Length: 139
Image 1: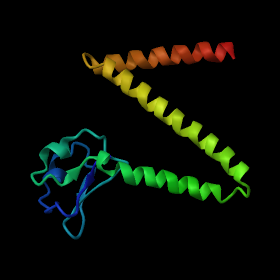
Image 2 (image 1 turned 180 degrees about the vertical axis):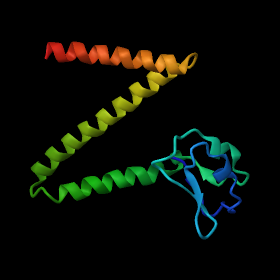
Image 3 (image 1 turned 60 degrees about the horizontal axis):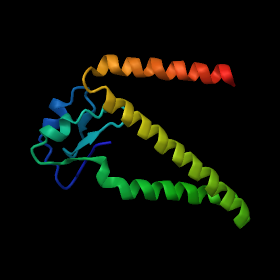
């Protein structure tokens, strides 16, 4: 998710004007802010900001990992023994492995549809739906 560096933002409003979905607004202090729910991650703001204040979420990877670890640490408080805590860690590890697998397969599908994105995505969805139907029928 893109974000605005408060240190670099001058409040010029270029990103606000250029955002195709209106996901960026200027706050009372003239600093831009991105509404995560509205943002479509198109990258227009990255390209158009004259100050480079729109930053990529990859820069926040350590903070995202720390937030995940804090979440798990909070969950561990519900378990009294090291064995129970280890069991939770095993389950949470499977959860994050699944999230990685979903992300990897999504990237793979998106990479495969470069020539005709709209039709390629619809075809990929149909293929996945058909696979799900076979899995449901077998189960």
